[in-house]
Image 1 (tube, one colour):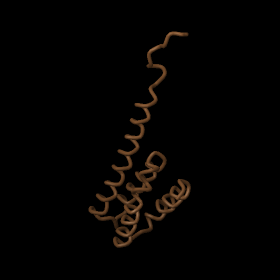
Image 2 (cartoon, rainbow, N blue to C red):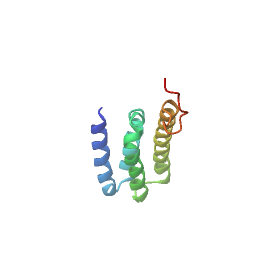
Image 3 (cartoon, one colour):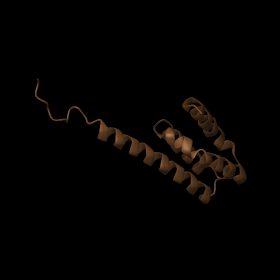
Image 4 (cartoon, one colour):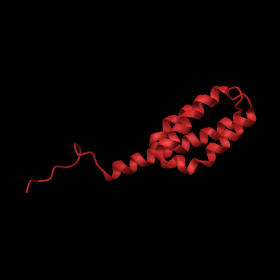
Length: 106
């Protein structure tokens, strides 16, 4: 699945969340999102903000139970952690040239 497809689907979901009034539909939607976790994690840098917005939208939806919201927060935390890990790995392998020691010309 391409990043554009994933972002499109997540943005459609984000727009639909306020209309979800049945806790069973919330459960099914969360289960679907959690089933996509391995794919979502691959694109955590790009979709992290969308996942956070989805969590916030479900938190504001009265049909969402505390248990359902907790499951979404786990996904949100995992996406955030994977993004932070990717940034740390990048910075470890690509030091800031401004702070790197100067090498003699030669």
